[in-house]
Image 1 (cartoon, rainbow, N blue to C red):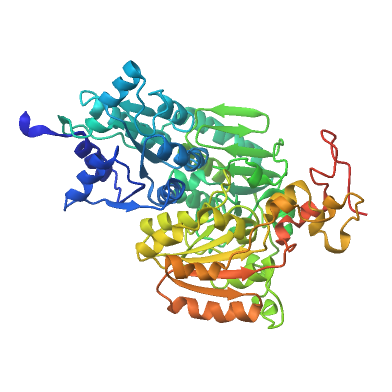
Image 2 (image 1 turned 90 degrees about the vertical axis):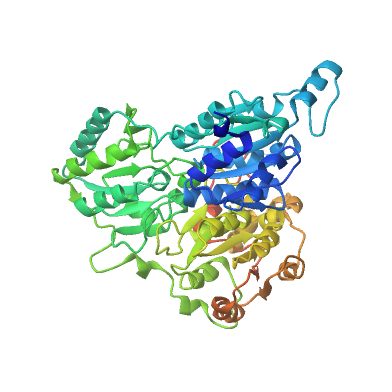
Length: 588
């Protein structure tokens, strides 16, 4: 029996390797050091420890890695580390990313001294449950390991929950427990996600097929297709029925956008006009793995009797609901049911016209005297992006601009399009490259968001990455200004308010101007600065031959906006209409 004894730290290492983990992100601390040392002392370990610049960046790295690999882990220290990481983990929780949080805690002796004497060790609040209590709100399982006796059970419990639910879990281990001995793993971890009721799935599929009879239908693919690895089933449904599909912005690139039935990203009111119009005209919209978030809809109302929304927990059909349905089962049964049903094959575009023809001709934007704008930039970038790249788009205007980029390979687009933590994209690119070393990450981030997490560039250079970061600099928090008062963006339609604050960008939305391209002198890499289209063109021709990290500082007019959000100019901003009255306002 003695030969079967290993440390608790080694037990966790073995389990993580069994789950296929290759990179452990985090910030080192003395409370987690015994675990980290266990990994680095093992010359045969399959896990590389990546020490990042801060906990938020480490969390975003882990989030993006999990999106592409199916599981990730991040290790921090008690209190100061764990609380800093919280924002990142909340994003993983909202967007269903399976991330294990490993938090090293003070020793059992430290905890007892706090109780008996009121003596606080480093990073303690006085409440030994303060960390775990916080994380219980953003994880599906949380355990505090205080001894070696139940350590294997608690470790396996959180990992099983992570696999089962596909969301973050939390493991807190007292520092002295890491070196204690326990039995080596014996039983395998759980396999696969939650299973629904097949009978309910069949019932829901038959109901939807009956509604589809004789109607023009369209599929709306969402992120759960990727999260639950259902691309094969989704494509089989498309091929068998011949029905065209769009995706949500969060679900962009769930399958290759080269597919002839793919017709664009439906993002509610922020969709391209042709996509939005055709989506509305479909008699029956069938959402598959779509989440109805504000960013997915842009204020568009999909809750009608002509809408079906199927997720991994159930199927909503108009006002009805079929619970406990596995999305995989529903896809399979729906394919069988629709093949037997005479639903019309709805062509979103006229025969012979591909959606590629709706993309602005890049050559029209390449006039030397033209300054770079959002739409000119993304029109040109559309022909720059290849299968070699994984696009990572940040919240705000960059995400709206990037939604139209053609992504040729499945899982080639990463964005935190629901939680929307600005600055996510730059550290997420580190996780992307660690998960897919064969790819080159291309980041589109606003200047304000970049200032939040720019230190991630340092980690990327340390790891020898070749990420390209386009900093889209309009010198303001544009999306924040747009939400509360779009008047400064209205151009010739701008309203002349007597209250002068409503005529200009608010001072608190102004960012401090940085020389972004010069940051490579600190972090490493190569920098460029562009203002005009011919300068952008010169840089784009050089990038494929540059094998190191690159920052491209792109100057944009302060009040330029992507076409996708121009619809907000025709509505009153939050500061333009007295709350809580419903806006009844349009431009003259």
